[in-house]
Length: 590
Image (cartoon, rainbow, N blue to C red; front, side, top):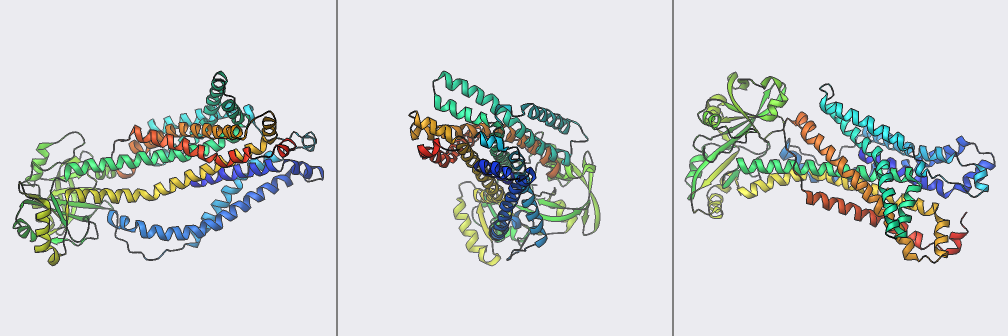
């Protein structure tokens, strides 16, 4: 949806530029009898043709990019969610038709307002050489302010009024926050650029003052360009907050629960749902390996509960209370852990409790076993990221008694004091590796492999956001090019008064920097708001996991500065275009 919104802004700016380039042509067409509707239809048709070209290129490119995506992200999907084996790309013509229709609709919508504004050009204005589409300081800021207030009311209601504090209401709230940011953009730009104009005047910096005034002359068009840039950055900030928070929470969780020195799985960098389980009889053989002091057996098995597939996770913590690190949200509950080690009950992950309200405050949970349904006592609720559908942790003694399953997915090995992990690893691989097809990892390698899978799952989102940012930068280029066309005579006058080419280029570099700063400033606040709603409200409702927000001010500052620098770089071509205008052509323009 964000990419489509960017596309609409791009078409809006492109068609606006086309209108600027044809002001005299529009006036002549009106003189020879073309109606306002005919003029509007001309530009709407051009917007539709732009959309059609985009659809053709997008469908073709999307097919090949989709095939590459399948090969790149298939391993992550198989390891984290469900085993999938795909060696081809399924091309759904209905999906293509829906996408094409949306693309054409967005393109036509983007060209509609510039087309309507083109109809306001009158033959008299052309005769007087004064046609212009600038909205200038008369941009309807009051309407934008009213829209900001309206969005604010809904946001407060969605966050604190129970009927709206649900998944659909919060999803709409995130979209409302984006709309609020778009409406806030012209208000911020008016205040910021007004202050910049006065500051540049006091600093006797005419180039900076002219750059700010150029933007203010057509605030409506410039604000839409900045709004597109703002949306791209806001979503990028939001994804950064979500990724960094999720990764940090998972990393902290693994630091607490993964205390073993070596981990052994069956031919996989970490035990997945497609891994072959091993026999529990291997326990004695592992303990016989020199350097191994103790081990822990971990087994995860699907179980049907309340119309969903949860995971029953078996772990033998009986002899390892000192090494166990259950992550309780409200502090370590030692009595619950001791009762768990004595096979007196089970521990529930917080997301299974969130997904199944009947478990809140419940004393027991009913699970499917080979001998039918059995009720097991609930000892407590812990933070656990083993399964997105929820997990029940059970000590191995109770698991063997209840489920009659002696298989193991992962062996956690604890080494004797002074034993070298590399030496023990080689012994295991030489004694048991080939026979049982084992894969031995150190604690660090195991954690890195899981974090790598998490990072890869977010890789596609990052790629899409970089694409969105690129599209927004094209919008800045379009806006500045239209500005060059609109101020061609002004550029000629400046050159005739002694302005150098570098000074003309400097105006547009400063202008692109001011646009980028405005978008980055508003986008950072909107992005933080999106991330806060996502992490503290929406994510908890969707997954059941309650994650704290983790972010680095340094990284946020880096993203902010990089966005401004990139926007300045986007002004390179328009600046060169403005500086290279021949003086004679510029003065006689229009």
